[in-house]
Each structure stands twice: as structure tokens, then as C-alpha cells.
Image 1: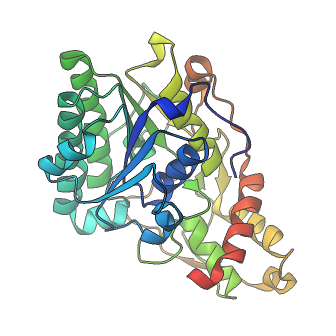
Image 2: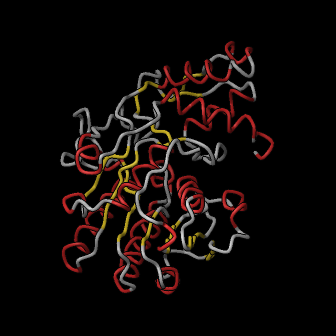
Length: 337
């Protein structure tokens, strides 16, 4: 895990807060910071979508602290930011379909909660606020690859909330001199990502279905494409945002991706190829094609030129390399699910 060290500062001098730290990306950030001896890593999570098992190995560490609470509570956000140097704000209610079914809760968590964290970060004078933005912000923009300055109209309540997050961060940067950086995540996958539930991401869901000899269900004809991005690349980019001393790189939003697109049909082929190393019969499992999902965009591909130029980002894992790592993890931890 973690192909190399992605920071050049002494983490033992700093205290970190990770909201949503029991979730997929958050818990991987926790693991990285603890591996490299952060002074303190504090997690704020209400476990609505995160899992205690993701942070269980860290609970007894002296430099780890868990606050069980909700970002919709400003008092809890203030307590979580007390004494903190840097915030990684990963807490959100994800999923386009969930936001269509329940826009009110998505709005409360992703907007009111985000604003609470900005206010707490401002008042507690944190050094830098790095937050999870989303590729859903591009909406109906048809241009490929996606460029940070060219977005379309949002296609879901979730997309609206993530775009407004960027607007709030920009205003707090200009009004209160806060340092903020947003990362528009593009279909991140990897270890600790939940394969179960109605809103499970496609890669862990397909992996577990194939392992269990179930047919994956593809929405549409399988020619929709995505810029699938392995978690190690995302950890690298978060750490580069944390440590950047380039003034031009601060108060920006970046695409967080690998920079190549893969169709869902290709994805299934890659998964079968990698899983066949463990079980050759998986190659014979057929795919089921279903209706296109409401709110889905046909194609997604990120330009990562801005992150390369301003942050010196250089992703280490292609989709096939990342899938190989992820599949090994799921195969060896199948009993947990």
C-alpha cells in the first residue's frame, strides 16, 4: 500500500482532522498519516456511511482520536477543529441516486455540514482546508476531457451540493484568507470501499458479484465510460495539496483522476482477467444489461494537466494496476463482507 512517500514535511509536527475518516477515502488517509507518524490524527464521523472496521486497527494508537458526531452540528465541528493544523474534509452523503431519492438529507449534510466545517476551520485558524469535491459538478458538459474551468448544468441534487461547496470555499478564501483546495474525485476505487448496499460503487460491487459467481448488471449497453482512479493516486494528490508551497496552487479546484477513460464493458473484461488468477471459472460469468440510470452522464474523462502543472501530480497506478491491487485486497478480506 502506498507506492511511495508523498510528502516532504515532518508530519510529527502537525495535528490533522479527517471528517468522514471511517469512510473509504478518509480511512485510507488516516492510514497514510499514521504510517508516517503524524503528531495526531483525529477522525470525526457519524458512521452513517463509514465503518468502524475501517479504523479499528488505529483505535488503540496514542496519536489517534475518534469523535463520533455529525457535521450538521456546529458545536461538534468546532470541537473537532480545536488544536488542528490541517483539515481533510471527506464527510459527505454521496451517490447521485440517493440524492434524487432524498434531496433534503443530501442538502443538509453536504451544504449545511460543509458550511459548518468551513466556519469551524476559520474560527480555529486551521492552516489549510482540503475538501472532497466531485466530478458530478461537470453536469451536462459534453466536452472531453473535463477542464476545471468549464462546467455544465448539474444533473442531480448531489451535483448541486458539490458545486456549491466549491463556491463556499472560494468565498471563505477571499473573505477570510483561508487556504482551501478542492479535489474533484473521478470514480475512485480501492481497498476499504464498501461493496454492499443500494449505493455501492460499481467496481467493488462488480468485484464481489464476480467472486460470488453472480452476473454483474450494467446500466445501458456498457459503452458509457469513466475515468476510474485507484486510491493510491488520490492519497498522493491529497498529500500534494497539503504540502504545496506554490502560492498559485492554493485556493484552487483540481481534477482528481488518472486521465484515461474505460468503458463499463472494458471494466468487466479487466475484472475477469484479474480475478481469473484466483478462479478461472469467473471468465465464464455473463453480464446482464439493464436500463440506463437516471442522472448518469454518458462519459467522464479528466484532464489532469492543472494538477500536474501546479502540484507536480504524477499518478502511479493505471486502472489495470489498481484493479490488481484492489482485487487482491477484496479476495483476502471476503470473509469480512
